[in-house]
Length: 134
Image 1 (cartoon, rainbow, N blue to C red):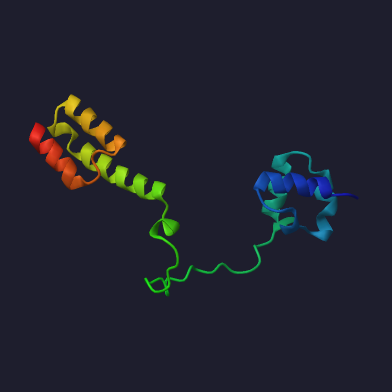
Image 2 (tube, rainbow, N blue to C red; image 1 turned 90 degrees about the vertical axis):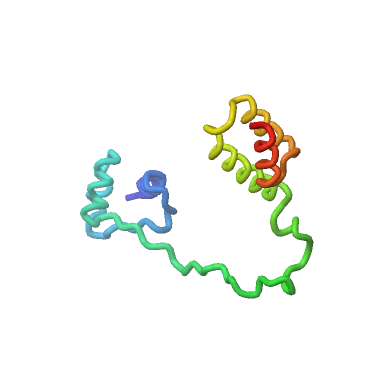
């Protein structure tokens, strides 16, 4: 009685590894007779097929020892230039969206393009740009 294909089907169905699937030795005949996914699900509910927990433990990332004396490399090595740019652009676009109803449409899109092009890099500069054009 070869149940390797059943294990493979169950692992694909549930998204777990084949090693975690255990069959009840007394119910092997029922497992062999199971054809559809519904049959397999009912066997899991009955306890004939068991999925083991993942072994080991997950650790939390340490928040200590992150000060300036422990850092090696440039600032861009820890947070890349693109990540910094994305963070900056999102902040500017969020502010722009919050004042969208108070400014004309063409001014909104002009500011949007200037943010994208890097001409406006701070919220203060954006406020200055919008304040002078309203």
